[in-house]
Image (cartoon, rainbow, N blue to C red; front, side):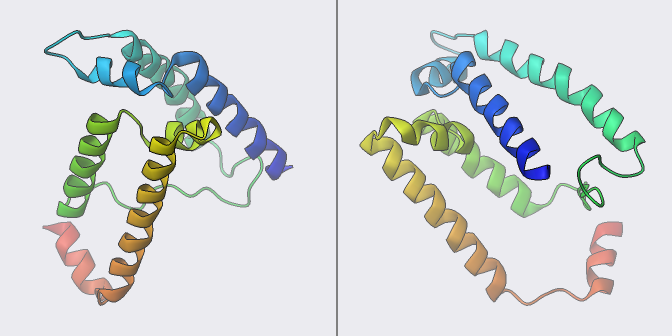
Length: 151
């Protein structure tokens, strides 16, 4: 049942990306060009996403357990640290340069566009490099992680 739910959620998400135009890099770049020929239509997409997801998260947090899983997996951290800022900046630069983020890029693979294929390959390579880098770093003892979080 969880597999079917995942499939349906993915299909709805993909259809939403297609209908909204989020898979069109030119539309995304026009939205990001606030000092030029700005196209605010994607702001409506983002507001609609918030209007649907906010009540959904409120309902999910009110439940003792999810409908199709044994337990919920909520984020364990809510602080803003250097890796979050650097990663967000890198994501923003990539999105601003190309007009694609991971979801629309994967959906755009169906076009077999060489630029999209290179983008997705570079994105995957970046994910692999990040994982390798993360594994090479020594793990912080729990006390040190807690002390950093408290400060």
